[in-house]
Amino acid sequence: MSSTSQVTRPPATVSGPGALPVTLMVNGSAKVADLEPRVSLLDALRDHLDLTGTKKGCDAGTCGACTVWVDGRRVLACLTLAISCEGREVTTIEGLAGPGGELHPMQRAFIEHDAFQCGYCTPGQIMSAVALLEEGNAEDDAAIAEYMSGNLCRCAAYPNIREAIRDVRDRSRGDGHAAS
Ligand code: FES
Ligand code: FES
Image (cartoon, rainbow, N blue to C red; front, side, top):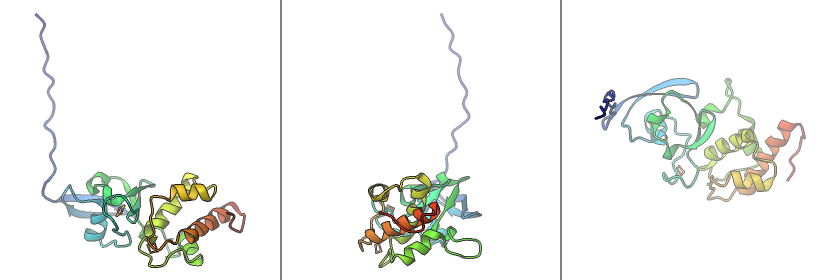
């Protein structure tokens, strides 16, 4: 007769459903908010941390208006639980400008190329556009369109958005002018 050994596990940690303090590193600063575990990163940013640059469009992962970076990678904040971002670096559109407030080259290019109309999708477009260049997925217009396809623009500013992205891509290569 064989004997079975019992494995003793520590009790599981249960968080919530009530609010508990969550510390988020946002744009280089530690921010603490009392959040229920069900709260999305988008609602945490907008409703608890007063960072309203990140927009809520569909709140269902289909429009891209809520795009932010977590540990340098673009994510949809409406589909990300804030509590899952503890100990990770969150970057929003408010964190893109330089220390003196100077605009990021992509922000300047959006202005120069008239890449928005109402502007509601623009923060998400810009966060995706910068990430796109970092990812190396902006070789041509087809690639730009494909890798920006998660960011919808109801004003259909797509040609100008692609122009802005091409401009920043080409300037970073020293080409000096946009190619198609
Ligand atoms: S608000 Fe997140 S994808 Fe639309
Ligand atoms: S500029 Fe209006 S939705 Fe894109």
